[in-house]
Length: 161
Image 1: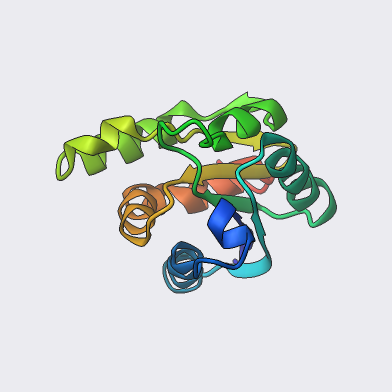
Image 2: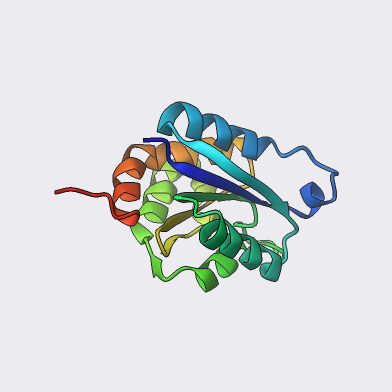
């Protein structure tokens, strides 16, 4: 199954064109190669809660993505507001995915405990917050990749017991 996937990057410098979005490139590669997904939309917005919220709503409600992967805005800096924006649009949280990412990555890098990303469901879309670095994206997404197909089957209503 080719999961319809959208990528949302939250980055002030990226939105201004001052930084190449290499984290989104890592997401694209992992989604296409490991998950067998199809990237249907890619957005980059500044670290502004209202803009992140608007993009998440459009990606879930208009583009009907099965999976939205965000990158950036998940650390402790004052402008890091992706988890807060995500929490405002989801209907149900999926804490096990976030916990799995943190605990897996913490085994190699204790700083992973500072990652504030969350995961949740809006309608029939799974939203997963990822860190803003290529290495962080790869490690965190790899930590949950084996469970994403089953999670997506459940969220999209295609799960058969």
